[in-house]
Amino acid sequence: MAAVDLSTHPGHLARRLQQAHYLLWTTMVSEEITSPQFAVLNALVTEPGLDQRTVGERVGLDRSTIAEVISRLTRRGLLDKVRDPQDGRRSLLRLTDEGQRTHRKLAVRTARMNQVFLAPLSAEEQAVFLELIRRVSDAAEGLRNPAEPLVTQG
Amino acid sequence: MAAVDLSTHPGHLARRLQQAHYLLWTTMVSEEITSPQFAVLNALVTEPGLDQRTVGERVGLDRSTIAEVISRLTRRGLLDKVRDPQDGRRSLLRLTDEGQRTHRKLAVRTARMNQVFLAPLSAEEQAVFLELIRRVSDAAEGLRNPAEPLVTQG
DNA sequence: CCGAAATACTCAGTGCGCTGACTAATTGAC
DNA sequence: GTCAATTAGTCAGCGCACTGAGTATTTCGG
Image: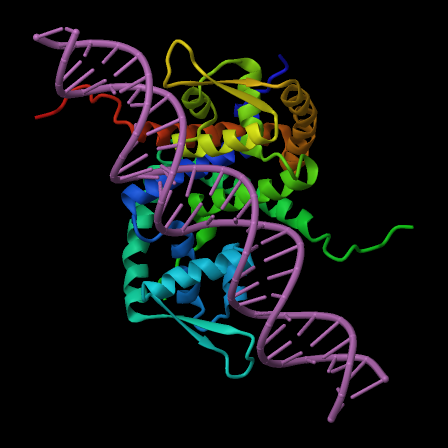
């Protein structure tokens, strides 16, 4: 008794949504390169030479996870990783030619996949969908760091 | 060049949404019991005595993952697992008293958390949000099993 | 200049999520 | 009744995601 209807729980739905996306990704985009890995490649297309931490920030991965993702991409030869001569703490990242090619190829497939994924929604619904997810995520993200409390009441 | 704007990619947003939810869950609901674990408890409140595979189906977890989740819940003493005397392949699951109590407690907190999570949206937006996620997930899920092709054209 | 604080990264540990290969039990065709 | 197919669950392996502890490097206060 007193069980809950999970289909009204955004967290549960978010998990299901991600699983659905994973499924579509592996069938329509790539079985080798994952969606987070593609996100990293994409970040480095825009800003080559970023350090590891910043890439993680761009794509929304913490220090540990980004380290693993990068190690896999490096192993596959899609990425070069060098110590920053100016700051020995940093690792600077750059796509290899192979990484560039892979990004281009997957970008095309990803666009197709997104169309299929969103096909059940009308064009207006698609826009609303993306906007609502963004707003909810951003707001929750904001709760993370109390962002230097404007006035420490009391 | 030719980089893509990930904020228009539902998969990327889905991942961020789940991370945001994870964050809120651990701070507002429980650091011990995870959201998928709660989903399992919840399924067994409604239908005690379900077998492992069916529970997985109810909450959307594959055979391997559900096995791990159940093993953790069993270790914590929230679940009892017994071989089905009628069918020796099955494991039948049932909440312990402790499991019942835990479910009740977390159900309350989860409701509060959902309110906070969805607070950035108006009431109508919240309804739309949940409905759109459901439609997209269900549709993608449907692509999984071609559902016995009606007519094998050709 | 020197020591403390901050910063970038690594490592160990936990948990979710998937696949493919395997085992054990049941069911069904014959 | 026997053998093949199906079904439930386990196990190994990969990958994402987080925390907390530890290391190396830089920066900053004095």
